[in-house]
Image 1: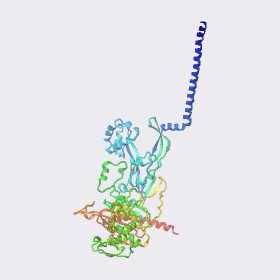
Image 2 (image 1 turned 90 degrees about the horizontal axis):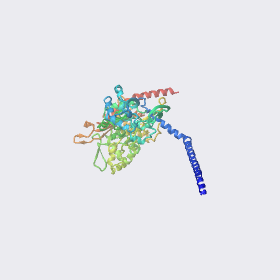
Image 3 (image 1 turned 60 degrees about the vertical axis):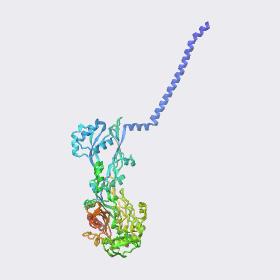
Image 4 (image 1 turned 90 degrees about the vertical axis):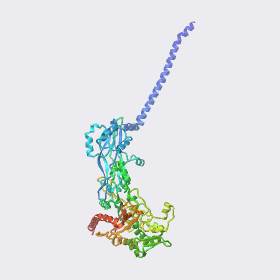
Length: 634
């Protein structure tokens, strides 16, 4: 009994000790856990603040400071004499900040009563809104007039979120005159985005679409700059920070084109459809390139209206077609100097060889007649007379003796059937008749009669005006080929000196025997003196070498000619090629008209006007060179 009481007296004491021990263990465990957590927290804190300091500091800075791209000023384009062809001009646009506009449709309707807004303007605005934040300005209407700016300013208070914003836009002062050569810029679209480096075009809205603007986009574009902008938590700009990298403007380009010659050439066409090219045969510089009709490139810069673009596409005279590069012309008799030269080079003829022209030519064993232009023929003619009088029989016979394989090979040396390599995109290749071409195109064999008509530039022949001009320049340079080109010099900054581009390496001559060239050149001089274009050189101080071409391109059904011309006597494609001075040429020209009576009647007078426009500048350059030579003489 006593023992039982003693045991019961010590039991609470034992339990108290047990609980104390348990508490100590738990407290120790808790302390260990707390210490471990503190150590882990300290370790993590050290990791974030020390090891990862730069990364998280950069992230924090990125949330506070945005890097905003600055688009570079696009390079300017000049002609060879410093006449401005493409410039950047200050303009004003309406810009809308969507988050500040409660009723967008209503606002647009009310705004349209003050400033003219087309359906295209609104469609582009809505499309552009989708790619921007609500707090970013979105262009609504571009190139506001002074009157429109004044009218909006009086009602500015009624349009919160709408502002007039200045900007630079591309402008082409000479408009249609250089549309097919200089080209134009346009807004960057999805196709452009797929091929562009986004970093190089950050902040840029326009890119070269055609012509020089596209081919030399890398030179004209420049380098993007950047500025840092402090923003709030919603990424709205607060202030521009001083840390700034200025954009680098694009290069200014100086072309080989002479705008005075270009203007005179276009005027000489008097609206007739066709093309003309002038080249300096000494170096391949293109002095003039005209495609008629043309179009005003300025509406394309900021988006041409759908109705206006449809009108250009549907126009019968196809103003959007670059006839210089893509026009397909049958060369006709302009091929005869090249065919005659090929015959001499191959040893099939010498200049004194003659052929009897009776008015008809027959392939041995065949009854079909291939006719001369003159009924009854021209009698017996040699090469010079055949070129001067454009005697078909001479070239029928020569082409047949040559055979299509040698014919194609020899004419290919003058660049026919291939691109010239000019610094423009979209150039066509034309067609140089050959056995291989016909097999690939029609899966048919070649026939001798096709060789005969190829000898006078008919049949499957197709040339572009630029191709023909390049070939004429080769003959004018006594066989030395130069790649036609438009870029003459660049300027890397407003005050920087002009850097004239180095000449391309000289290529092998297309003419092996100087005497062969002399015979063909004499024939082309006689064309102007006494032949098919006689009198076209009247009063001109330099001797002119030339050749007319008339290709029957349109057919007759009953009494109607299927031609773009209203006159049945203008059913031909007509051409004229020339170079001067004939002995030491400094200019080679070609003119191609889509409808006319003959090359002599229609194309040659245009070429003469081109030479007249070129002459004063040439005489001035010759005088300067003579003066400089005299001053440097011992």
